[in-house]
Length: 154
Image (tube, rainbow, N blue to C red):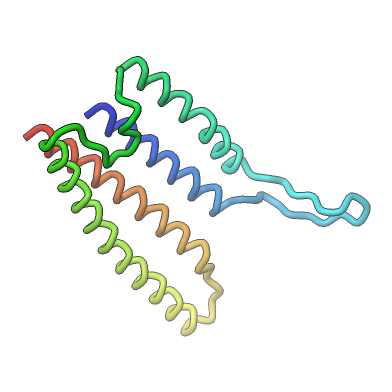
């Protein structure tokens, strides 16, 4: 159960950092004649790059300390029939959250587009879409982890 919690927490942080990096990639963007193109990068892509380097190393250290098997690197891995059923239930719950969330996200995006047509206000569909996708990925990961833990304790 520790492994699923660690992997899920790691994935949630990864999705959050990816979302922030895509939502706020540049704090300012300037063009200079002599030097060509210069961009000032926000902190989120730097944090994402650092996380992509540090997390695999930390996970490797923890997995060696806990003596976890190397062959089950995914959250979907199982070692016996009981865990196979647990993974199936957690995947089913995550799938339901993901499908319901996608339908809701499409409705929200359509509603925002319709709202902007009537009010003539410029609303960034890119920003809203990335935000909804990030929230949806985090929610599906949380639902997987919670379901997995509840099923494991049965």
